[in-house]
Length: 190
Image (tube, rainbow, N blue to C red; front, side, top):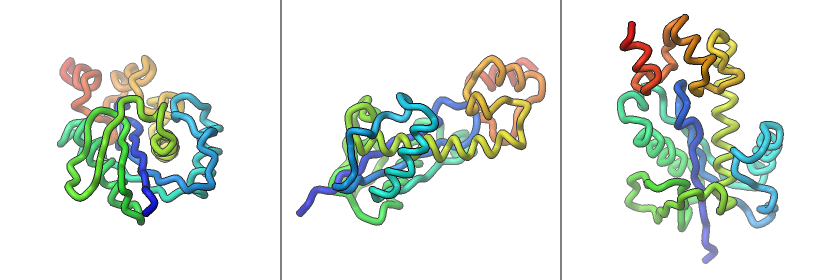
């Protein structure tokens, strides 16, 4: 029996806005693994190109945990929930799931392993990092059209000076993670 390996990674964990996304990817034997790199180490345009290439040559799924779930569970548990959802959405059940990081979602019927900096070492995880990042970036870009005052089109919801200044001036949106320290600190000063 051929071993089926899935790689899993998330995107948006450190952002102050919106859901955290996760992807699970099983690469097929035709794909050139040498071109797949960690999403943080390649340009936006290369990520978008590779996302299409990966999707054509892989079994993949993408999922998320909402801002409300992040507020309720905390960002670590919400990230693990998004990962679990992505794994469960795969059409094929992998023999082994390798997750970037140092924690695993609770899934009894799956063989799970974590690997710190796995997105730099395992092509399946790198592919998952690309798919999750592109999906999240698309969502934030769409959102930024409605909430242009916060500069999300440039900062992707991360805690830049421009973003924090906008929160102080305009307040929070329903998409802000209000329990995250920078936002919590701003809100508690009001």
